[in-house]
Length: 160
Image 1 (cartoon, one colour):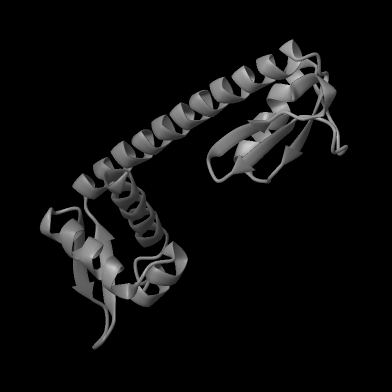
Image 2: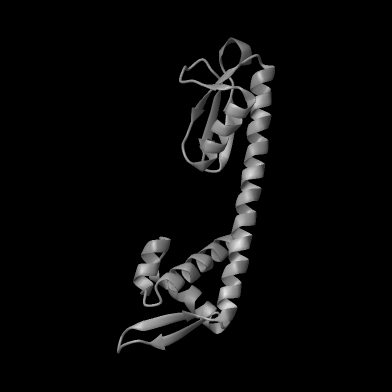
């Protein structure tokens, strides 16, 4: 997980630098939601590996330039990110479909969805595909989305 977090940060750094070579470390930190020291550490690492170069634009301003090796790294990191997202989608969808099987085996045709975000959207699409109606009644089973997790809570006369 640490490696994927570092990869995601380095990908975001490279993308931001590509968009704006004059971007500051403070701006990068704000966009990534991390401390300036974290940005500085990643940048030093990218520079040491030859992925980014620094040129002095003005007395106190720096310009970051992505090298051809840095562009290749960005491509690899992008492909890795996409692969990880598809893996997350497939694993989440598998879990949701298992929950929906349990709901249908218990005799339910509807479910209440609690939570928001992309994982909840996967739940909605899976329900639609299986012909399970999303409802707001408390007696229906609940698919609860918390972060990346989906839990099933059975209730009512069929599921207790």
